[in-house]
Image 1: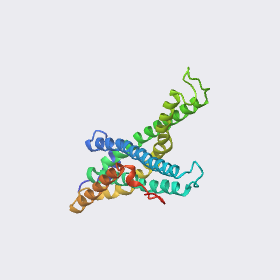
Image 2: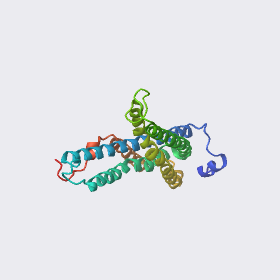
Image 3: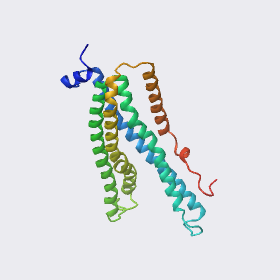
Image 4: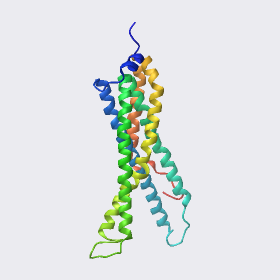
Length: 241
């Protein structure tokens, strides 16, 4: 009998020169970017729903005092949108390490973890710092005295550009950046759980490939779910046609 794979890995480790490990590192490095894209798109959809709800209440006469603001509806939209958007994000975290482990085996899973930790940590720091810089830029411009000739202060072209930057920066520093930390933790936890199974069943049978096909379908559905427009997530508001 040959030496078990677990003992081989413990004696020689995981080598980057192995093609499976390198492919796993590439896949792991790409997952944080996909996850961040999904989370930013989720913020965009939820914000669009809130904007539509605010416009609806404005049309009913909230600003004129004809009706009272419906705060409950806005909170409900935000809560339900957040719950729906978590589906695709959770699928990425849970399914991706299982797919890599089953298809490319445990060496690739080790490279996958290395890639996702390295890429995710750098991307999280980048997003947090870049988003904070954009946010503080807008606040700095607002603190300036308004001068049309010098293009300073609120209402200036600099301020309009700062508002655009802040609109992009808020999802980066408040959503996508901080969300990468729990994403890395979930992927690591799933990988630790799945690793003994991958070592034991290093050759997939018919049942294994059926599982791989089902997991791949789940990933495709998560990607399609993330591409849906905001209107498909809309909640029927009271009195809204």
